[in-house]
Amino acid sequence: MEELNCDVVFHIPIFGGIPIYESVVVSWMIIAALLVVILLLTRNLKVENPKKGQLMLESIVSWVYKLFYDLLGEKGKRYIPYLMTVLMYLALSNLMGLIGFKPPTKDLTVTAALAIMSIILIEYAGIHAKGAKKWAKSFAEPVAIIAPLNVLEIVIRPLSLCMRLFGNMLGGFVVMELIKQILPVFLPILPSFYFDIFDGLLQAYVFVFLTSLFMKEAIEE
Image 1 (tube, rainbow, N blue to C red):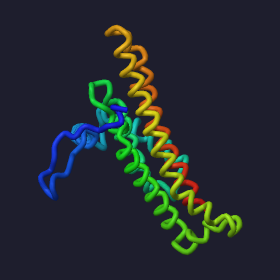
Image 2: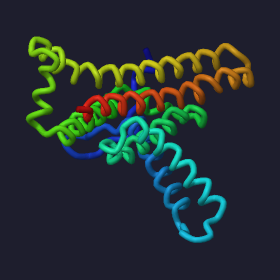
Image 3: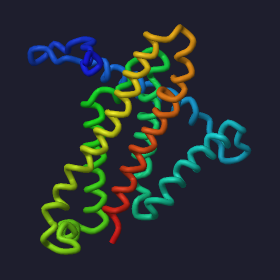
């Protein structure tokens, strides 16, 4: 139960003091790190005679882009940068336990915010692809009687995204903390490869994959 509590790092002295939690600070660190790495990797790019590092970077970005493009198609390609950004953020967030920080995704408010952002974009994608009138009519398909269930699905989808990510990350974090207390110093390294690395990266992929899958359903005719 202690792991469910988020530590307050400091307060912003307005409106009686706004608490800033550890998950927010770690998220800021991840965003800053991503920004610095991206600026370093994308400087001095060349069209002619690119270096090996640039070719490798382009190959990785193209491979991830194609992964989403094959799923979303031409209509959904405008949302791929968002999906790739969330994937990078989640991957780093879920790996923060390796360097002694609590993963931000262990905080329910973080996973809830990500899920709400994703579902808003999913519904926006549906409206953009079909038009507001046709999007609204889609809730009554295939028969009008199931319209309430289709509307309820708008709430169920972000809830499932949120709880899946939160539950897996919190469970893995708690298990690793228990293992560290029970086993000698070096033995927790082996389960750490699964809970901190494999499972963390897997959950990042699952979250983004489900978001893109729901988006594909939203933009389909």
